[in-house]
Image 1 (cartoon, rainbow, N blue to C red):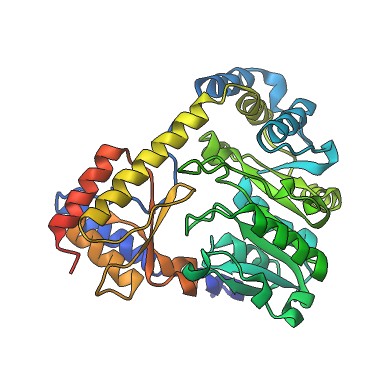
Image 2: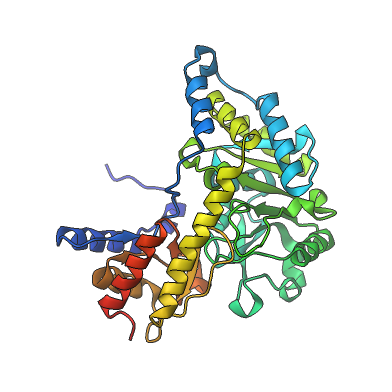
Length: 389
């Protein structure tokens, strides 16, 4: 039988990632070490009290029923966390859990956009920012993030005719992959832009607690008027290392949350109750581990970025997130070809910038998922590999 599949699946060619994986296997088969900085999976453990809360809750039979909605205790925990961290007050109808921000960022477009509606998404940007709306039938138009503008959108340069057609705009800082933060003044301009053109803002704030050099994590919702124009995702995956538990929350405009909740009632039955209880423990419990982890990420960044600069690869310091956004060394222009040569000659595996949009070409993304001593080892491997011309 010859099967025919949806044309939308044509967008998901593995391409370079299959080639990189083949190259990785070949390097390992030759007995050489591979340093995998291609995937942003935290290597830190969740806080012990969070794991204890999850395991104890999982031992109670009554927690295996459908959740259907959030526990009141979880809503209170989110309210308290936003109040303490950002001085933002949230009503209960302004909070909803999702199975991780990736899933939530995809499905929200189903609640907000009809086929053909325009969605503005960053280029370069994390793929789900564009792919989620695309899978919902929206028309995705990208806005450029350029290094000369600090990788911030030039809102004044967006064509007013396009802005008037836009239904939704996806924004994220600290931004994966480019690892920069945004000042408060930008968010003030963003709220005014959304109000002027009647655009719903969807802000991904997954890395709010991983910022460096004295910067403070912030929230889009702390800006006056933000709740009137949009919502924000915040994740427990990176802050508390609960990546496999799949729990995040979307907060902000009550009308958006209500419509999204109605949609989700058709596709799932709520977050597993023990995971909700673990999230409560994370949000309400001691935060010392979060700060200690942030400092460790910063030490890793210093070892990697500073080390690479010392051998002639001019890599800027990441401002936030668990990534480094590195321009290709002199003599290289193709990020995919460079990544293949890099892993072959040095054992270092990273992600081509072109995977994050056309304007990501000329860069690679490296994840801060190894301790400083290993980062120093990576620098020595790059120097010895002769990759820097």
